[in-house]
Length: 84
Image (cartoon, rainbow, N blue to C red; front, side, top):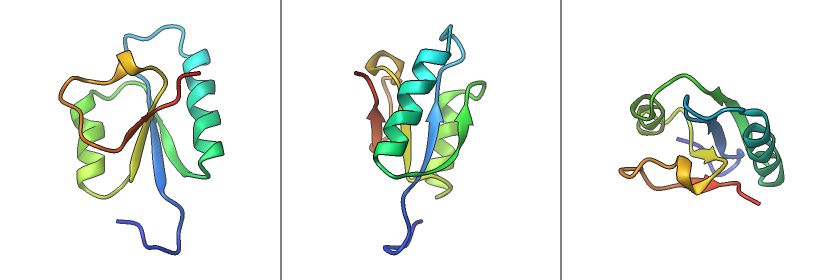
């Protein structure tokens, strides 16, 4: 995982059914910037299970989503919603 000397690593996840993605992406990017996260990437095609596995594997510390409705019902802790 991340050491105390580095910034948390984040991934932005936008579910594949969300269209258009631009406003959601902008909200997530703004949130990641405000929180000073190191951004690993933007995920728009992978299912939630793959994103969750990235957290389990220690590749990301936090997943940012744009809207509370984008959260899967069986989500893992440390997911932040960047809604207005």
